[in-house]
Image (cartoon, rainbow, N blue to C red; front, side):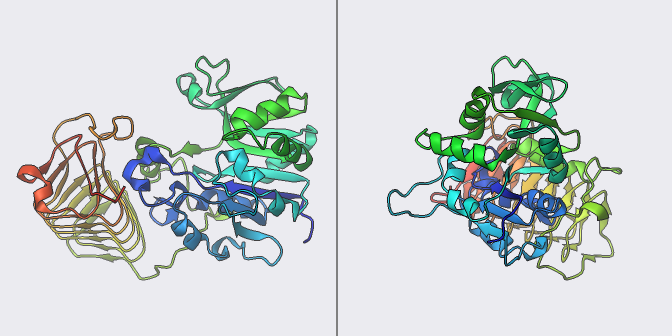
Length: 423
């Protein structure tokens, strides 16, 4: 192997349970975003745009879709003989066979992969954020400070700081304190979960902490390194960065794409977002269709009206149907004369005629009030919904449903239908 200056390790094994039924059958980084992309396309595109050509993708939870999407990395120019993209699921070893139990444990289990490139630096990334970032600029900062570890950080509202690892740093970025999800944060500079380590330092920490249950970067590795007086620096990032970890933030991030001047531009030539997109048939808009402020993917057919929505590729919207403020993912078919208001409908869902989404008043979710709390109707992939039913707010559906699943033709606000064996 040719020695690499820096390789990236992309953590893409998470379930993303706060996305509810959207991740019942698929890993969070493989969830569709912005019509034709998947969430993992953003860190992968950042890598190749930053000149990083060696990326290990650590998968675990329901990784088939992710594996198929990434393949050998052709869309991202990561199909290399030396380097490129490598999928790294947990595998059976002779001594002990383990799932990845924490972010750092996942890296520890792949020491052999990293050592085969003998890099000077290792970049650790999450697979579930929407942003554009030049990691080379962060590496230049890391070198200029003679740092052992550099943590990408950004200011967050004070009331949200307790959700993150936060750092207290001086005006040169030197980290004085690191607190993981503190109840009373002493700083609002939040870790983005993006780290550059000197490989020798990281390797020593991972080997020392190998028996730590659920070994994690924020909880264990960063404090371990910091407590040994290594040079730890905060690299402040001020661009767009969105953690799409909840249904509300996922919906918001999609809706922000269709602003007249979007805060996050998917289509900049100098920083392209690449994806594996196999649908190349043209769009079809029927004569009476109406579309305003939308993203519509290739191969979709629009016979009805669509407003302020993100529509994936290969979607069919029937005559007389009105879609507003919604996300409809690829391959979904919606029948005639439906009303879809503030819904997230995943891939390959079949919806009959005269179906209404978003009816009635706010109602607390009976399934999980923390997850289904944003007035959205959320439908899992490969589900089906019969004709002539009404679906309320904060609802969830997973599976092939029949008219008898809807008392009096209604799924009331806060209720759910989860077919046995499908969660």
